[in-house]
Length: 151
Ligand code: SME
Image (cartoon, helix red, strand yellow):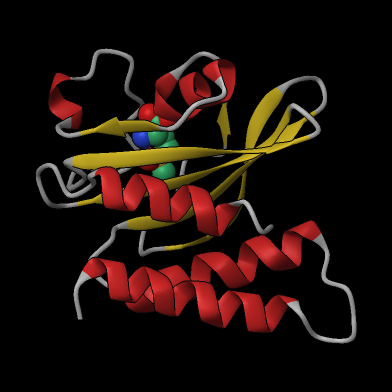
């Protein structure tokens, strides 16, 4: 299955999971989404969310991966904090050449971070780490933006 098909499958699964009779909380949706994404893309090192807290700082949220993630990321720092500050998706082909990078795992080579924006406010960011160089392209960006927008 190519990555487009995998993302289509993830979309179908989460849309079905989110459309049950009982409403799901933001946390429950993030949990399900990180799990389904990681089921399809098993090679990812980390796949999950940092949630915006008050006063503004990103705190670790639901995630999948065999690492102990950093607990807090200030706005503007790292790929996650930069994505939250600029309210845009950031793709890093090689984290070793990205100056404003926070390392949680030494095997990560490429990374994508997608902000989750509700009413013009960043509520969380979806962060994915890969051990492969340049693992994320326009297909990942558009697919993850589409999938994460249904949270
Ligand atoms: N690399 C991220 C930190 C979070 S971990 O990748 C799980 C960053 O630079 O914001």
